[in-house]
Image 1 (cartoon, rainbow, N blue to C red):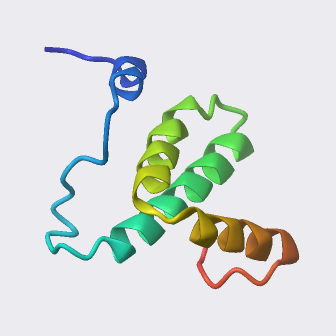
Image 2 (cartoon, one colour):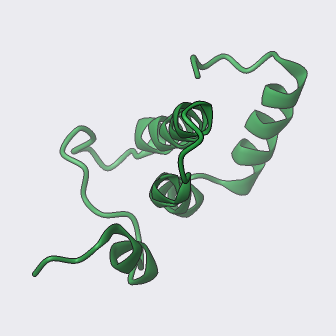
Image 3 (cartoon, rainbow, N blue to C red):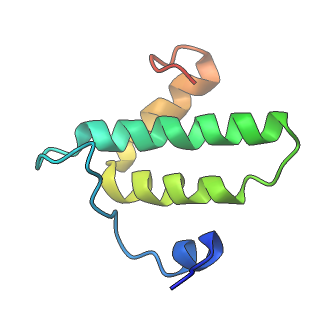
Length: 86
């Protein structure tokens, strides 16, 4: 069963279990995947590589995070006041 990243992203339904976040409260998982998405984009863009693998993180955080949080974080990123380290 050798699925490629593209196949996994295409067949994606909901956020899979992440052993780093075993509890019911998925707030940290949401925030971590948001950070991972932006870190991935930044790292791959700096190397002039395809950022398609980063889509996985985006799909996970869009599943877990309320849209109001994502909107707020996006606004903070644009303003330069985002509290996370990207």
